[in-house]
Image 1 (cartoon, helix red, strand yellow):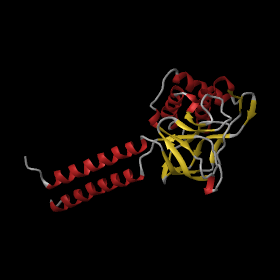
Image 2: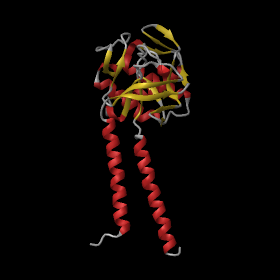
Image 3: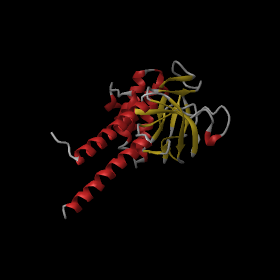
Length: 246
């Protein structure tokens, strides 16, 4: 069968796009350091307690935020005892897809301090991923819904030691946890962030910051190649219409 010029160009473009998407997935199926995480100054505050100690410190979603220049739809906190600066730029962030992050000694589950699974187990980390996969996007634009997502994450990690005093947030959190049940999601469906190393805004020092989690997003190179392929299709279509006198 004869392969025309358009068919060949189309095949090459499609294969390039598929290869770029595959490459992006492979790039994130690992742990990398030196990533640039820029956290925005907007976050949510609600009343909660951990081990009987009351607090109204902020939580997710933290917006607007970017990772290596790519916009993030949301960023949520994993642990409570560690803190993160907002707004701030963390240019030596550890990113993983295996549910692990860098936690401080104030956390109460097994395996801390250091690099360990969120909540100390793959099951809990998978439950956190499921909550985000199913509720984080829908919560965009609603402070109460975002607070409920953040509370549900902390509730799964800290169990009965964590309670919520805001009635509306507590009710919405309960609905999320009821839907969660025993479900889990792939740990790689989200990115697990450790914005430590250089400290925030490039400052030197120990810089252990609060562990975070965000949506899995394409690499900037993937977006660029996809855009180029799309532009090529449009350009060819215009030339073909012109040649046909359309």
